[in-house]
Amino acid sequence: MCLHLLVFIFYAIDWNSPEIEPFELVFFANYALMAFVVNYILLPRFLYPKAYKHFGIALLLVLGVAVLLEEFVLESVYFPDTRGQEFPGFFYTLLDILPVMVALVGAKFAWEALLKQQEVEELQTAIKESELHYLKSQINPHFLFNNMNNLYAYAIEQSPRTPEIILELSSVLRYMLYDCKAEYVPLEKEVEHLEHFVNISALQIEDRGTVTFNANVDSGYCIAPLILVVFVENAFKHSTASQSEAIVIDIAIKIDARGNLQLICSNSFEQQSNTNDLSSGIGLKNVQKRLQLLYPNAHDLEVKIEENRYTVVLSLKLHQLSAV
Image (tube, rainbow, N blue to C red; front, side, top):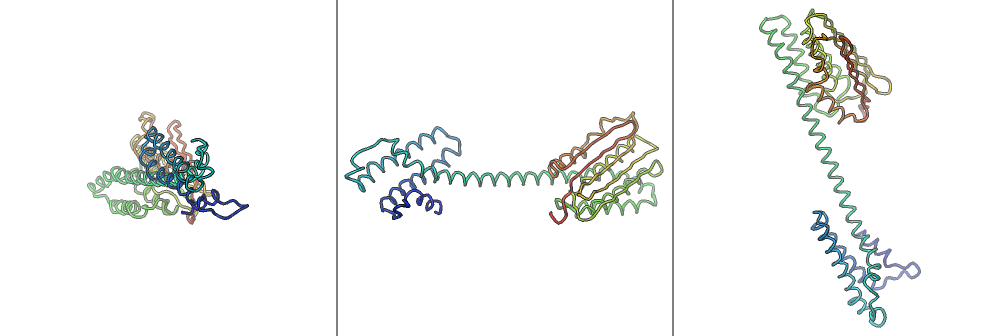
């Protein structure tokens, strides 16, 4: 309604003589009626289903009806002795009709295009959230598969470390199941979870090597949950699978004053093992996809394989906790 009023003002009012004549209302109603037919019949029935040929024919018919109504009906009623006496031609009359109809139809078309774009963005967001949920859900069974056998072995041996393993495993699972449902979590919670994970994974090594974990992080930042743990899990998996002794795993996390986090995860491995598998696997592909979705143009992942050393360097631009 506001659009029609605005278009009518530009169409009908002459600022040198601002009075509105009755014929202007009737002529404008003719244009508005034809625009209504285009907006609510032709667009949804022909243009949107991409029946362009039918839309073009129907549009020409509507314009023809508008011209005929104006020239042979309305002008005969309001201007019987002047304009109603002659027909200046289809295209001449069309020049008067088109600006109003283009304004009314174009505004409707633009509004629907805006709504459609909003729907597409909402759909893309829903797809992204669904994909992230799926990727995150893959991590829990992946972690359990890699650790339940270890717990079973300690239980069979009736190791005194079994309660310790269960306690660490409980902390890790509690975080996975309850604390990391949000898209982002406080950085210190993620680091605490990572420490529990390192503790339970280090039990697999015992006296076959050394594990170091250093984290120097500030509060006030948040991070996508379960992003860092995949690299640490891979470090333990590849080291223990390829070496029976002299295992060395070093994990360091630091953050600068601008909120740039850096994870350096390095592990030893034997050259005779299949090094091609080091850069593959569900976990690593999973986290790379999540990084692309959650940190587009805000992360850098570098993987180095040098002699008997495999190193991952991940840099992330973190969000402020208050901004999420």
